[in-house]
Length: 189
Image (cartoon, rainbow, N blue to C red; front, side):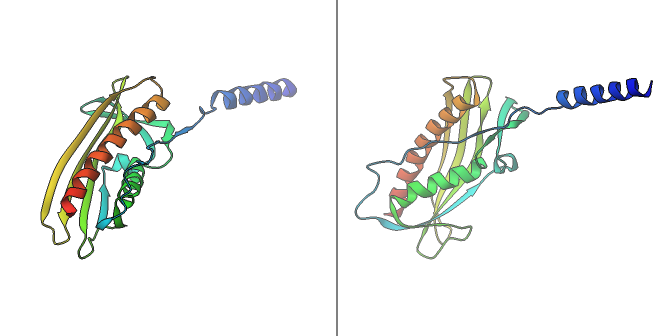
């Protein structure tokens, strides 16, 4: 009798443990190729870069906008690093190709132009779109506003999986970076 109970208990424990297994965690990254013609021989000035974002974009989890009022965070699909960090690194690389010195700091150095990027959206919308939205503010070191702009991109996904989202957001971010860097360059001159 005890043997039967012990076997039953072991079988139940094994069934319970197998039913509690978690799905595989997948990690996705962005691919934004460097501009081949963007490096200039006569690089100009210094830029201080700041990137700000809502809290959910400072975490590596992939977000899915279900409605204007509801956001779902994926538990088993992640970015390789938080979207705010990826955006900062991509902007920093693009700026370094064009400017003599690029600093990432909250305080602008004397004589530099400050580029503040406020990442507002970096997520899946519906089942077939990726959405990127950011505000960029270019200002002098003394705080004088040179230019403000908002960049919004809603890109249709080629495939409805997270790899398709990564590809769509990579494309959207590439366009946004080009647009903001061009505006930053005109603000330095």
